[in-house]
Length: 176
Image (cartoon, rainbow, N blue to C red; front, top):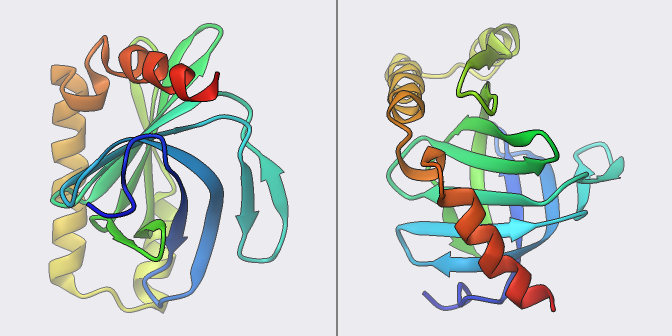
């Protein structure tokens, strides 16, 4: 896909259901890209919040986006293992040099031992009311939480033991 060639830098843009920009990761290196899947990596990248605040990510991360699934996965390489932060979100689109998705607040944090915690249910419930998520969307999102947790239990896709390490090794070749 044009613009998703390995080694190319792109942005990641997160939106809310109402169309407002939520968060932007300034630079992510494409490791594999197609119309169906994007795998990228970043380290100490600038993140800009919707209110203009900025911060830098703390550790290298491998990002997994899919055009079919209503979630994305960020594997963060820390000294004590790989932690995963999973956003329940719309499938991604790629346009104007950026991977874009709608963030639906629900998140799953997965620890190196593959235990996990579901986060931000209160925020999800609030936004569901404020932005009037349709019932069909609510069902899709909760089904994808279950699907994501199945991947965690099965150590499938980005949760497979070698996934993050292999993609991180490739990322290092682009940084040298």
